[in-house]
Image (cartoon, rainbow, N blue to C red; front, top):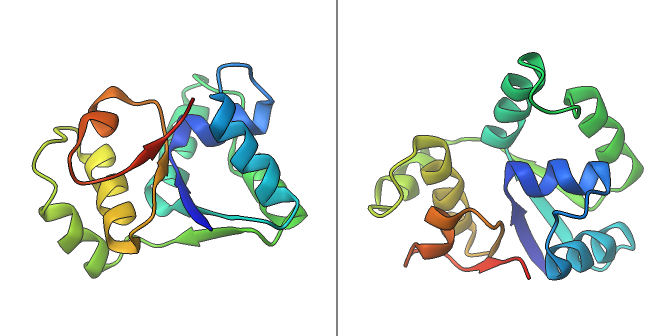
Length: 130
């Protein structure tokens, strides 16, 4: 099965942080065992760059590159025209990056690993966390 991760889920997974939801943790673990694929939006990579440069998170692009090379079960999804068009249909998530993330999940028709309240409340996507 395919899942899309949001930024903080990926960061917390990379750090083995307890903040990661139990079900999300199980999916990440299963993906590293080859049973699932975790999609990572280009927006997530940009957010990691931004947050790491501002020292708000300890994970950086090199950390993610290492994680991705350890498992072929991560795939980066570019922010394409189709993703942006799908994002245009998301009318209940105000923040642009979250909206593009939801648009990516809607375009791929896969759930998002997130505990973000705006994304979780959206009627356009399915989320998994606990």
